[in-house]
Length: 397
Ligand code: ATP
Ligand code: MG
Image 1 (cartoon, protein in one colour):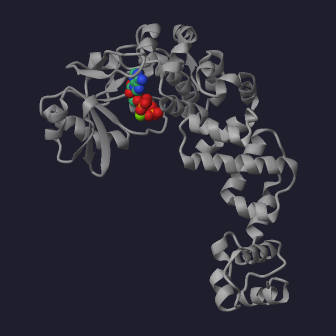
Image 2: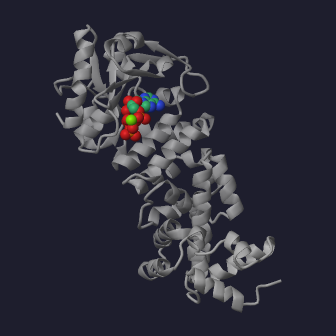
Image 3: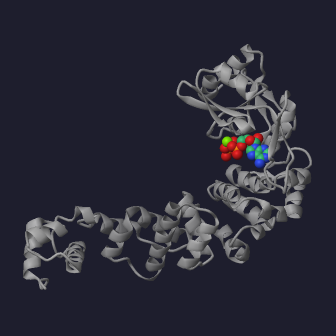
């Protein structure tokens, strides 16, 4: 077993020593079998949450109502969840009640896809009740049980299918695919945050084109806010040559592809419940993108947007087939004598105290002009030189 699982094996053993069953389950088992980097190790057990807590010294109640306790061992955390079924699905959303059960079989049955319904014991023995191994081998995503029923229980699974397709670069099994097309409308019932999380994972997957093509072809796109009316534009992304490197790059790519105005982008990102940070970063990138599509950015613009935004914008332009001289732009940025206002050798206080200027809006104007001269390499960022420049200049009221 790989190191991560070796380290986690004592958790399974401790539960077994107390008379419970315990297994590795879900994504980590799948990823182990296909040599993908492993995120987090999930454990399923017949022990109830209280019993899990009694078995280990350090635990945190992360999701007791779902039966999940986080166990901390050797500074690692493990999510340990009681075998459960999900009952009383309402409105095609996540169940509002979970029922603890005593068998692994019941627990695996409620999982979304066969490749996610594999379990592994402490000796590395795989438990495969739904043909997950074969589907891993065939590289297909297939619902556990009847796909229509499973998507009625929780419509998010349709988004999960296309996001796993993108992440794993797999196909989608025929009946599973047909059921998504048939039931795509159910996706509108799902909270946008949950859809967003899956959409973003789709956007950053190695098999992006495959997953995104399915997202459109299976009509899921028709059920998401704002983008539902941009199907034709979004289809253009299927011809793109570079993949987005991160969250902000992904949203910028979508925004540019749909040719959304800055005001519309703002609304779009809010509707998709993105954080302010993501929103502001995307807006900065698209602003600079719009500038650079027309002409070289000025030094002032390079300074204003900063290196991170510049690099993201260069990536974005390349994504849309624009040629950019990245070396030249980055050189220009590197040669800026100051990278931010606090690097300026002078400030308002010095202007007032040393040069006897009166406090007021003129101070800001002078600082701006000094900054401008430094950005344009007409002035050194040196206190003496700046004072001299101000005294020679026509700045005094
Ligand atoms: P990732 O590497 O992205 O974390 P994962 O397979 O671990 O992939 P999670 O969303 O973390 O995905 O879910 C963990 C496991 O829980 C899944 O492998 C699956 O067995 C089960 N699961 C999660 N969400 C659902 C769902 N909506 N319906 C059914 N089973 C689910
Ligand atoms: Mg996971």
